[in-house]
Length: 126
Image (cartoon, rainbow, N blue to C red; front, side, top):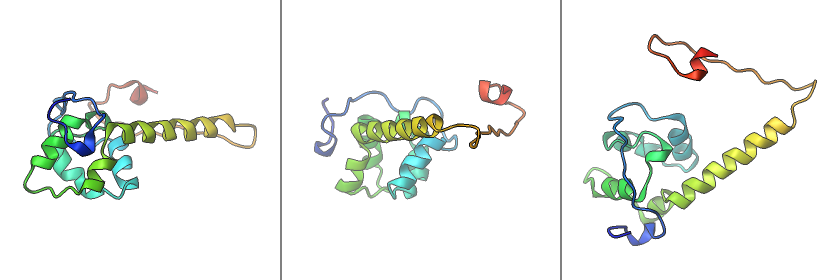
């Protein structure tokens, strides 16, 4: 855990920026940041290869804090810890389970997807 900032104690210093470059932020990261009132960090995170919630690690937040164009308060850095991300994911999973548990004859779910020329994922094939 060497190199972690004190506000990020307890996170694992794993790799960051899994090679996605300037690709648009994925929905999980966007939702996490917007719910935390940190949507203004989307563009700087994208510049540093943080485009999905799984990219948000101790090491990636350290790189973000080292960017002179980014002013990250102690409170904002605390929101970006891996434990906060894990709590967010657990909450999403709990809410999804509650939604799916209450499906009956009166409630329905529908899956909508858009198609793009380079789509090849299972969701696009549905």
